[in-house]
Length: 189
View (tube, rainbow, N blue to C red):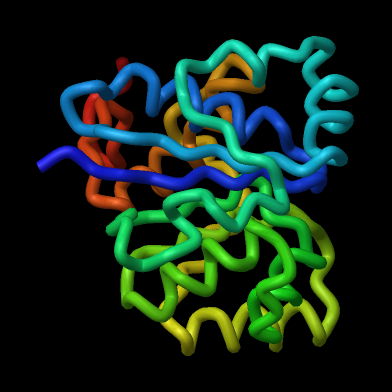
């Protein structure tokens, strides 16, 4: 069965993670039915600064404004199965942990958690303070998955996108999507 997914992109550094995620989802039409995207104004600025373009506009997905509570994934009845927040700022993490549904990102996360579906937070911050750690614990206890943007190196990535893909491929695995990626113990490609 094809999946209905939400991708939220916050203003944390790490736009390459969002780009690689969108690229990979676009290449999975046999597994993905719908992708709804909500992107903060700061996320657009960070993308343009870090990646030097505004290619976030070029994906064939449905975009929703940050305060559009009429988006389908603002309700559990729309049956979106997984929400990725990539990258996830610590402010967004804190609002989700506190149950504050004050925009479409946090409302979408709240809906995913209440419906017992998959919320994957690709957090992008270092170092963590105790508040961050406690917020991660709260979200984990509520059923969310903390997937830090901590790349692996054993596949010998040769570009920034290949390095980011080591994290994104793990996130896609968490959502139950099949990816063609290097697996530990497999021969190098």
